Length: 255
Image 1 (cartoon, helix red, strand yellow):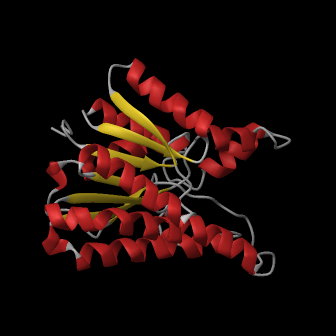
Image 2: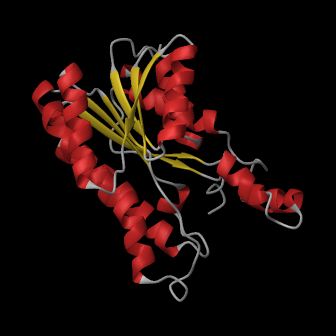
């Protein structure tokens, strides 16, 4: 099950965190994984680690907020392989604030990465997917794309847009052999989150407060999100499209 041998995948924002875990997971399943990231040092590190583990990966420098980068990535991968089977739009950024403390530049900055970057990169790859009658698109949204979160107005606005974008792509191209799904994680214990926790006066208390949002009393692990991405990327999920898969430890169970 979940064999991706012969598949070509691109995972954006895969130099760290959830994206890094997804890149490793897809590679272990047999895919050739392009590690796409704006951070060259960490992107190259991830690709090298995948290769050192006996799997196949290449780094591709990619800033999804720049449309030319999206076109260049598509050209590079299509010229090398003639196809992209799996596109994981994972790159994203966040912001803390209400409508009173968030300005239009903040919203535009998040929109340029979280939504327009996803739109532009998908648009660059989808014509070849339509031509081949095959393609899997996985978009990283958030539980904040399904439920409001306090002090996260810009972030939630963009993640709600990601869910809508995903559903529209799925509906428009269901008969073209293309599946599009969103994954909606709760709080996940990434290196970034751990570094932020370390800045609190009482990191253990801060962790417990953040973990308490999840019904099971802890944050998720990047590998747990990656496992869901692997399922959606595989042919075992051939009947799954247009869904927003919640992976959030029961955050929404009581709402």
